[in-house]
Image 1 (cartoon, rainbow, N blue to C red):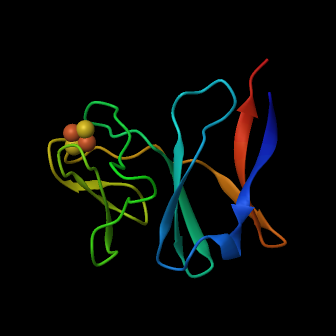
Image 2: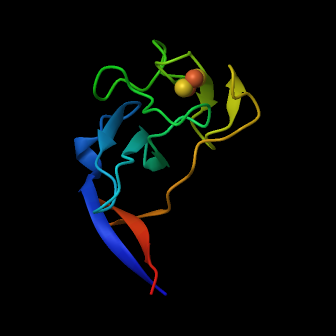
Length: 116
Ligand code: FES
């Protein structure tokens, strides 16, 4: 098993305090979402732990109005940005699936395991 790095975008393409959706790995129908807080970026699978639907109703709309947490558009679950933990909603206590990333020379890469 080895790690593959797939470039998502440049850090500067993500607005500080904002979020953006991306395609998942090739062959996967589950997308990704990235939230930027300064030089830190949190990336999760774009699938709600409740019933697995994408979190955004409108593309790239993942955050509450004040930008303090991630919201699922389907039933309103609220997730902490820092670790994806669901604080409120039907999947309270569950967490979004974190995706490992690296930031190298201003480019955000997701780490994808190459099994086999
Ligand atoms: S699908 Fe996200 S809260 Fe129900």
